[in-house]
Length: 408
Image 1: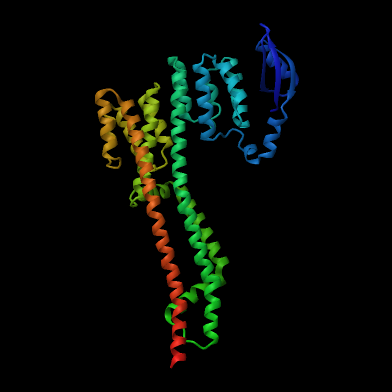
Image 2: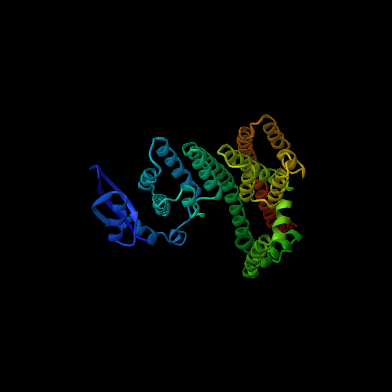
């Protein structure tokens, strides 16, 4: 639907500018009149309507919004609501400030739904790709309790923490992955281009190739002759692994095994503990019931083993049991998290304890990622050095034999 820019004047003579979406200019003018605003100038926004053409990805994902964009918009909305803006005016002002065309369209649509009598949470719920269930439930609780400003502040804090956690994980993994790719390219380059040309000289001189050189030459010949087949095999393996992981049985096995992998399993568990504690604490703090909060938390956890534990714990809480005891039963969650939840239940400060636990595990994730990065780098350098050393030895051995033969 086209976006129109307008300059207008209200019944009190106050001028304003803004944007709205409508099928044509006539309908856009009618929408403004229903708001008590009379347009002095209205035209189609060339920038808003040209952007989807330049960005194909956004064209096909018109209702998708990144976590970073949502965090920035939520912080701005919290500021506007806290400054005393009525929700409709706050949404209008927010739409003016947004750079994301997708989110601008969505906010304008939400504003119009609210003007027509819908509540804010219901209007946001119509865009599940932009506003997750957690977001909508917290806004609904904020509307019911009259604490929308606090809800938006908490949501902004939560989203910013999630963005920062993802940034730390991505930045920590980028360098090791780059190093791995570099090492693989170096080894392939040596085996495909260097080894055959040097060994060919030895063969022409009639030198007898030792076993390490024969093995290295065989690997080189295999890579040179069958690289298309090898590439197809790798792609096929990745496809099959992805398909198997997509099945219920395959994902359950993978998620269980990944938790048992040294270092990696502990990191995965800490990441999920940070996400669970932070999300559950935020939801409870803003008036969402414990059962509904556990249901939401279950859906944001990536590991099916942990999902099943949370689901069973929710069923236990529904029967009147303690959350901490239900989470401790399978023996997967760390003792510290379970104990902090237990203390929160006994003291009546579960929300505060969950928030502390979330921050604690986020710090642990940061420390673990730093440790893994510092450990992976020397291991990769040692591995690359070992492979290169093996290639050099396989080349040097026949050279030594030739020198000894000449000396004799």
